[in-house]
Every structure is written in structure tokens, then in C-alpha cells.
Image 1 (cartoon, rainbow, N blue to C red):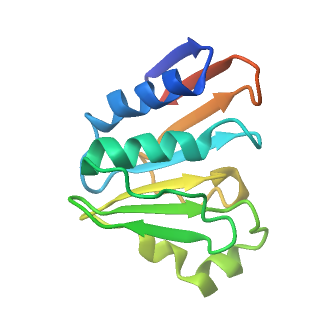
Image 2 (image 1 turned 120 degrees about the vertical axis):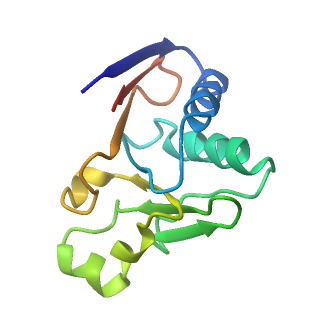
Length: 140
């Protein structure tokens, strides 16, 4: 597994890293996005959606709805597992349906349900939060 490590100071650099990653993504890819509260996970997804769809579609964390879909080519499914503790909840909510060969799926807090991400998923970790410098680790 190859890892890329990027150190940066602000949210703008985090967004730029998401844009660079977006250029390498294809339909069928899945990403797991980890980091503490306030690390910039949703900022990362917002930049990814903008880069892939060429628009500033409103992107917010689906913490309370668990799943957002951003239409475009390819569609992007955005899951947030922060509030899930039981794998049965994921099945009940149909979250496994967010994965498919025709879309890109991004999962915030994948460590909450580690079996939800498919094999070969790209793992992304953002270290740091608030005003602290960030470190981005991407494992492919």
C-alpha cells in the first residue's frame, strides 16, 4: 500500500489536496475519511465535489441524515457514520447501497463500521483540528 503524506497549515491547502486527489478518482472508487471533530473532513469533501462536478453545490456533513448524494458525473455519495455504533443500523438505513461501480463514495468516520468500506478503498486521515496545522495521510 502506497502512502502520500502532506503537511500544511490551513483549510485552503486541504482543499487543494482534495482537488489533486479528485483528478485521480474514477467511478467505483470508495474513500474512507478519518479525523477528529473539526479536522476538515467536510471541507475536504466539499472541495472534492467541486473539483469533480465543476460547481459549488452546497456540501454539508450528513451527520444527522447519514447520507447525501451529489448528482453529477459520476455521482458522489457522502456518508457520515459519526452517530452509528451498530452495524445493523447501517443495514436498516441502506448505507451499503451507496457503493457501486457507477459512483464515488466518501465515508466520514469509517472506523465506526470498518466492514462497510469495500476492499481497496482509499484511506485518508487528517491529523489536527481547529487552528492547529494539519497533516494529510492518503493510503492507496
